[in-house]
Amino acid sequence: MSIYFRDKTSPEIGEYATAKAMIILPVGIVEEHGAHLPVDTDAVVAEKISADIGEMMKDEIPLLVMPAVWSGYTSAVLRKWPGTVIVGTRTFADMMADICGSLISMGFEKIMIVDCHGQHRPMLDMVCKETADRTGIYMSVTSPVVFSKKAYEENRRTGQGGSCHGGEWETSVMLHYGQNVRMDKATAEDAIRYHSENFAGDATRGSQRVVWSTWGIQDSRTGLYGDPTLATAELGGIIVEEIKRNYRQFMLEFYKHDRKKI
Ligand SMILES: [Zn+2]
Image 1: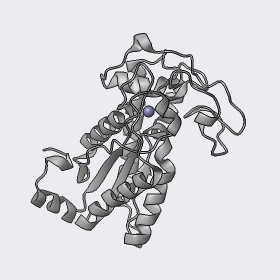
Image 2 (image 1 turned 30 degrees about the horizontal axis):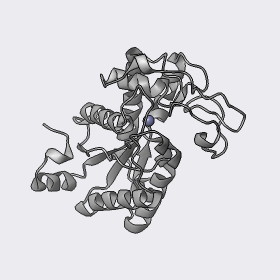
Image 3 (image 1 turned 90 degrees about the horizontal axis):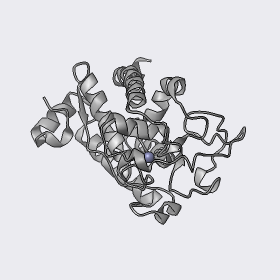
Image 4 (image 1 turned 45 degrees about the vertical axis):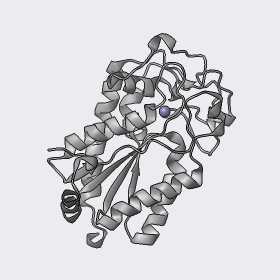
């Protein structure tokens, strides 16, 4: 049976809401990802991972997977490269609050956001807090990058600075999912060269102690931050398996959690 929200009829959605099904809500963006990755990389990764974890968990907990939110906020500097669609921070937060509010008004209580775009986190955190204040429903925001960290760090081939925007991690995951990746166009030119105790310059390695945007640290010539040249589909498969393992653990925890019983 389909696990996709958009395939269901209205009465069927009502039944899922009555059964308190979990909602998996993938969130990406359409923005340039250099010359080797498609502009919908973040939205595709969000949707593919959400589909994988939904299929994996559908026999253990009732759930529905939403269509990916493909539009959101990214830094204005990305407009230098064609393909970047930017929605302002407040518009994005309001849109997310309205999407989540609609789901909550239907009766859904367990909403898990799958966040696949690095710049959305503060807005999604804010939406969660405001939604909880308004409705009493505490949603969760999850990150496949965070859930993949252990296996990725054990298997990656690039050094610190190789994995940020369009680098080894994202390119490997896109190769794993059989997407349109132009490895002949991949370049290491914009691997992140600046690192300190306060600024990691990498999505999973190093010490990040402050908020300080990568886009203000080092100019990008290609629209990338990282080194995609060493990416492989095999590494993408290792990353996705680790993501699935950690989502399984968290989804069971999140679904079963009842603060009235704590
Ligand atoms: Zn991306």
